[in-house]
Length: 301
Ligand SMILES: [Zn+2]
Image 1 (cartoon, rainbow, N blue to C red):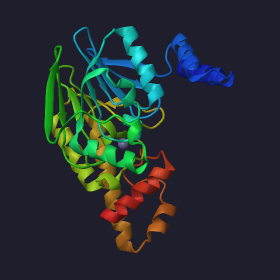
Image 2 (image 1 turned 180 degrees about the vertical axis):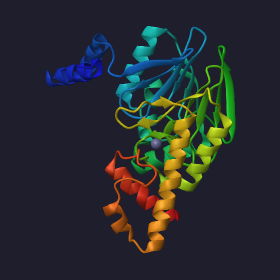
Image 3 (image 1 turned 90 degrees about the vertical axis):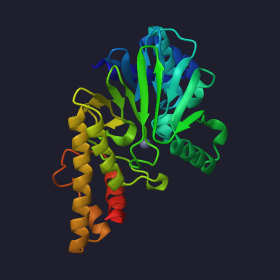
Image 4 (image 1 turned 120 degrees about the vertical axis):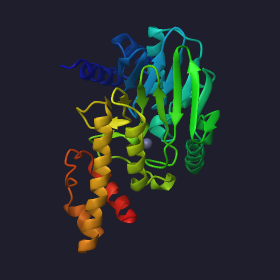
């Protein structure tokens, strides 16, 4: 049995024993950790458990966390990081964008960071959706925002944030650890999996395609990218070739929907008959999001 599966099964077993969340957390720590920690390059790595991939930098001189999944996952992340390198406060907490599977664990870090940064629109979006759900008291908003670019030095690393326009939402940051040359793309990249898009928060496919092109030109062949999500058995990190593949997916999606619309296919017919997008067949996971992609693209072409 794979180690991860073993841990998951063991954890489910502990839940079945009726352990409290704290006891379960303790048990998870004894078992190792609920999620997966992986070092990517230098002192930069990622953590996956449930929700959008978390990026981190941890050295004796610097500590950065990008995205927080949900509270339980952030607790696990925090205790896992501290066993590697103890720290009092993070230098930087960063959110790639506002969605709950990337910001839900923010409150776990209350009082545990020096700066908390996100794009200005991400902060607005986070506040709007929390107000809509009557959950303003449960969220933690960034303390600092930017509109085009932002950078800071922490230890030997320079961390820069870039905004290249609306795509997945209208507030997606790309976070670059310049010396390690690792960049977190947040949900601008769903690796071989139908992406979630949020038109209500300014997301649109045409813009998204442009943003991916800018990413491809701005970073380089040696850059390792962290992806917000990946299809099962696909990695959550990769290269510029994966950025190009995602850009191609969006291009083919728009082309396909436009052609079908012109031919007189109705939206419902299109949804019913489509399993994959021609010339982007690697994207085949997630029926619900496939339908959403078709519907959003329909409105754009
Ligand atoms: Zn998202």
